[in-house]
Image (cartoon, rainbow, N blue to C red; front, side, top):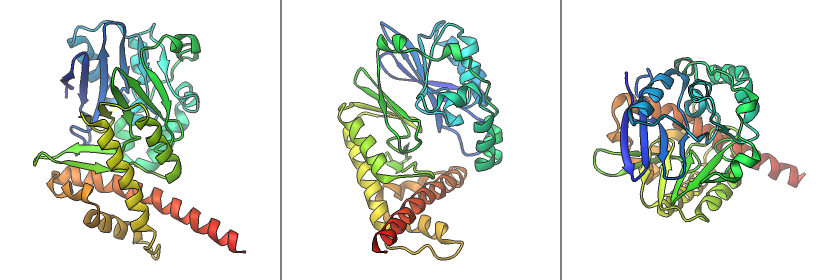
Length: 309
């Protein structure tokens, strides 16, 4: 398989990667900014598509990168970083400090990914380590043409990256998929351990930059960044309000909650327009996001019980 390239805006390309996983078409991408002052990647995809990414960059006539940026270290976003760093040996790697140890020694991250995602994790492929000398220094970052925003929520080691009116959101703004009808499917990306207030603060931090184009990790760019972030913020609050009155009884409550949200959340109503294999993928990720909310709501209940004692 080969990557495809979308020229989404002046100087900005979305490299659409094709991992060998059913239902993952048009889902994982790497952003390439070819600006007048700097050329840089934002996210690199999994190790399994590293060759696709290298070939797509070369096909665009790009022979240097000034920065390799990671929004976070989950291996669908960062798995190919060791491969790409070897391909561009002089390029600093930009990563949240909490995630850097996993780039230097990715074994624990790889094992945790396989344990959580099973065959999907294995299909992403194992990471290669990054040499410590390749991690971007404060001096290198001081002259970078972008702003790093600390945006925990989806993960504790998450950056959003602001540059030239664009905001590379990783998964801080959720997952946004275009639909055949022309509408959008917008899903929270809230795996355990999730804390709602942390995510809301991160969204507020992003909105303070007033982004025009919102560049999602999954998937593509939406031109009305402020509106999309506001809709996602309200969606998170809607999930809390909806799920807080539901019981966590029995082994099947996660599936019950997923079904409830698919029926009640208008931003999920496009689920029926997704192809069957994408629906399978999305149901898995919906379940994981609901588990994050379940853990969060359980922690609120524990805190309330402790206060009453």
